[in-house]
Image (cartoon, rainbow over all chains, first blue to last red; front, side):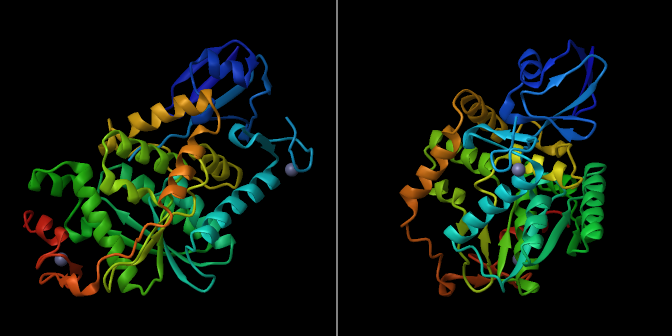
Length: 63
Length: 297
Ligand SMILES: [Zn+2]
Ligand SMILES: [Zn+2]
């Protein structure tokens, strides 16, 4: 499984897939998120493997 | 994905530009887009003294960083809003950033002044965000005038401006439409010119720039801004953009083309009065800020 950490600290487990498919599965938009693995930004075609951790950063700020 | 410039491994893809970039070429793209806005709207000259309004969030810190890297004479101006927890954490990001890159800062602490936002809002029986807007605007204008700056820069990005424009159109707020223009002229004798060099870049791009360049920003939102209606328009716009990449920048730049010839020269200084309490220029004998804070005393 892939461990996904969100900006607010929430953690979810998800099956391995490409970044694009992970965002789709989590119902998140490509335009409002960035995904990192070990602190490195990932493009949407990158595959995330079993046992890897990723972070999903919500880039929308209010005000 | 490969970088469109060098064919190296890309770190970010930008659908609206139909491009992907490695770190180096993303930084180049980001700087070019900023410079393009600065030149197109004649925001400032190389020798101008610039004050950038910083909150600790990604956009303002990134703008500060980019202007500094371009060799501009830039000072960051931060207002501690006195919101427990949030203000402490955002101030820490600002000071850490300034220390790391050796930048000039001005800090105004509203707790020291006796005007922390939640306190003033409660006493004046007004909305937190409205009070915050009035107080911030006052101290930013005041610091720009007192510090002898030529221009005030803010980190407003494409998503901020396009969603504000959308909200104004939906409410047919014709008179506010112009607030989304990238340059707002100086007014009277004291009000400095305001510019938004990041209007061509999205939030996703400023966040990526921050991450790639080791700019540590405050990710949490101001607790007072929860449920802000501006977020609803942002969400609507991002839903459209996600399905039809490029729609947002088209919407915003076409608006700019339509209004580019409009006369933006602000009110003549003859019409302005001097606030009898604080000495800043105002339309009335007492400025909006002084009228607000006198309710607190
Ligand atoms: Zn490259
Ligand atoms: Zn006053």
